[in-house]
Length: 154
Image (cartoon, rainbow, N blue to C red; front, top):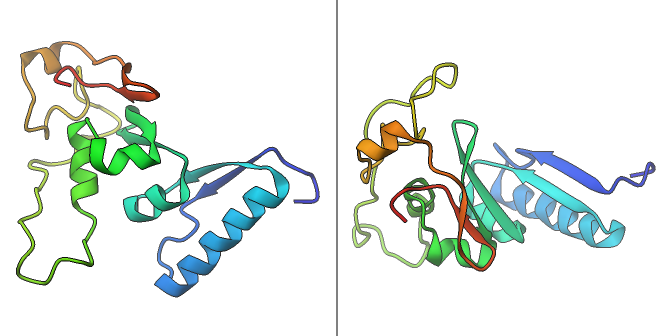
């Protein structure tokens, strides 16, 4: 912090940590962000952590952006099928064991990032995939104010 950076890149800063230690690290990052006026790029696979620390969320699949949205909108207004599947994987502490609805699963194998599928990279595992998805890559487009999605079926 002595060099007074403008951007702090946090790549999986709390993965494999105990929940209480995660909370301490996240609080420290929030304090640091405020104190130094930093922009943070927070890279993580844990959507529960991401949505709580971020102002904006970018979901990527095989190196391509699927969706960008304000974090307050992502939980209830996710539009891309991959974003919705990721969010559905977050356990709900208010639901009793046995009462929860079945969590949707992603079918198929993960394609090789070295040889990704044509068109939409998520199409081989997407429940909405059509021939258009194989033929052309979807462009990232604004679907609501400050909410962008790369999907032919949104």
